[in-house]
Amino acid sequence: MKGYLKVKIFLPIILMFVPTLLLIPKASAGSFGAEIFCTMRNGGNDHESSWQAAYSYIKKQKGGLFKTSPKQAAGQIIETVVRERDKFSYCVEYLNQLYPDRKLQMENNRKEKRRKQEELLQEKENKNSSGEAFDRYSY
Image (cartoon, rainbow, N blue to C red; front, side, top):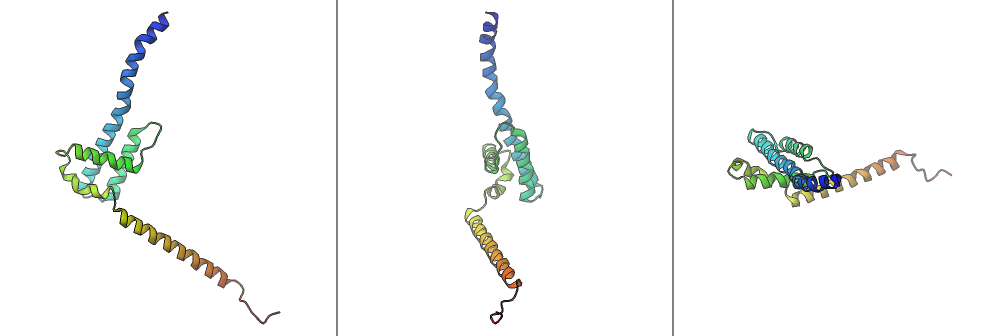
C-alpha cells in the first residue's frame, strides 16, 4: 500500500515537470542559435560560416530522439528574430539567405544534372574511342 501511495503522489509531480524540461532546451537553443547567427553576420562573417555555427549549436542543444533538420533550425532562427524584433532589429536583412530563392536553386540543380550527364557521355565516348581502332578491312 505504501508503494502505491508513493506512486500516486510522485507521478503527477513528475508528469508536471517533464514537458517543461523537454521544451526549454528547444526554445533556448533556437534563441541562442539566432543570436549566434545574427551576431556573426553583423560582425562581417559570410552567410555559410554563420549558418554552420548556428545550426551546429541548435543541433547539439536540442538532443532527443530526432535530429533537427536545416529547415527546422532556419525556422527557429526566423521565429526568434520575428518574435524579438527589438533585440534582433539589425538581423532582419540577413533572413532571406536562410531560405534561398527556390527558382534559382531549381535552375542550379538542372544545370548540375546536365553537366553530369554531359560528363558521363564524354567519358563513354572517350572509353569507346580509346579502345582498339576498328579496321573494317581486317578479316
